[in-house]
Length: 441
Ligand code: SF4
Ligand code: SF4
Image (spheres, helix red, strand yellow):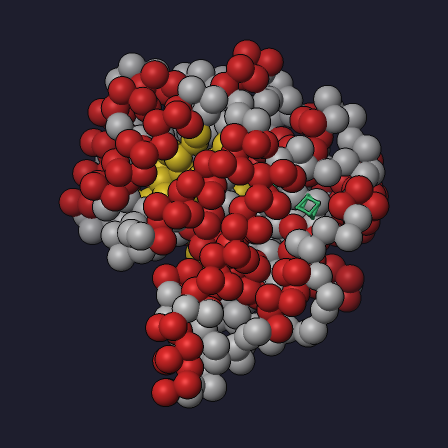
């Protein structure tokens, strides 16, 4: 498991995106007392962890990635971050902490920029393309405020990437949306609008798995022609999953325990998408639960059962080694809130379609005359058979030693390449700097 912790300082959000499926509600801001308990809880997990606890965030090893999420995480303002950032960084020392925030940036101030620079807070935002397309689904005025935030961040030399949400309405404008991100020099990740566990009105914006698959393949082809101009982290991760045989984002992997989220009141959730839904809490920082106690919660057991049994539904899918049945939240929505242990992510068809497209295009690049010439003329054990081609260049970074296998995906891996996996932070499929995605939409 990875070492991510999502802190949701407030469930409030000043925007009113029509399709938002995530937490947005009024309520209190996370207080200093709760922050102090978060630090104690994390330290206790590290200090008193049994061997089995070694994989949890806070196990005292490696870097802990803390992402401020929402609601809108800048609602509490600079005063809150001035208190929280040193408290978390110093309280968790000697463990290294890396901070990120996923925000619409409306409330970004110069003071916050200075603080974020001081504490190395990476910024991701949410933007769905040109103004007309964005504001049609995120509300009038959203675009201008977020672009102003991006400009402010850039003026302080803070790079910002975006989560772009594609809805049933905006997916028809994919070329314009792609061109917008290229033009603005904004790297982005792809987020499909999903039905909501809590807001049925969001459902009409959600896109079908088929449309999602079409979208990802369309973007893949555009992306491969524009690799020097923009990065699409979702496609980077999916391509590297195929070459590395392991997931790079939370959707593709066993996420449980790797992305715990703490809400403003201290409730602990399996991930930020569940923040503010008490039925999905696995504990509360107030009681400093151990890993064993978290694991004993009904929600943890239910989610774990799915991780263990979803393979039955996925059968002999060539991609199971890294897809693992997709996202638990999506599976839950697809099961109308009652999670069956064999519930696959309903967007399975889109993942398969994209992994197939990656495999086909990579094979074509590998057998291209340019690549074969390079392989023959200038042998390079580091890069093996992956020498020339835009997709191969993405996949090389994720390549690891693989074992022969009979499935198409694994057969593809046999072609490979010797270099061990590039040490890369595992990420939730999110905004730039591989920020966690979620209910920001
Ligand atoms: S978004 Fe889905 S895959 Fe990612 S941590 Fe949440 S439940 Fe897991
Ligand atoms: S692509 Fe579909 S069948 Fe294959 S592992 Fe993922 S969810 Fe399961």
